[in-house]
Length: 208
Image (cartoon, rainbow, N blue to C red; front, side, top):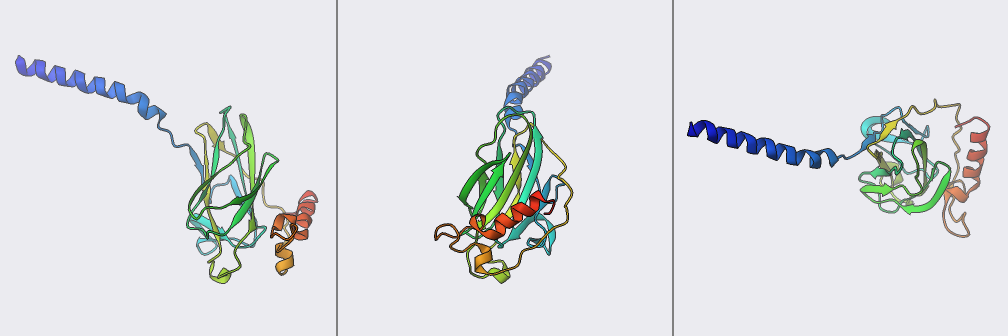
């Protein structure tokens, strides 16, 4: 009889512990991640490579100023969040981005970790367009100056969307002027360069 009571007490204690721990586990949500192979992401054609040639499922990398990546999703959260995931990148790269049309300029990309996306608000559909603004002019041919995108971490209420299909596209080839060296009142920025402005005009005309 004593053995039966002891088992009952132990069982009740385990159930109580389980019930106590359940709310904590329910709140421990890391969010939703859009990986580099997701149909919710699109990379600018012609200037990205990956962890396996042009592909792979870990990251995409580019040292080309003006290279872009776009993410598409929706969320039920009224306080959405998004963080761009970076892995093993060069330390001297800067990015700029548009989130739902709102512009944030000149963010120093970390070598690893994440960039918290500012300006995101409200539930519903969202779009993030990220551009490589500048990259270090060193060891480019062996990707020594690349920044590496591993994905986008979203709030737990998010659902990845389907990115629009790639349209006919244009690849601009040039030199340091095309890249944007000293284009922004003496500072380097592809987004202040004629190549970026031409690309935006072509985008409005139906080209990627």
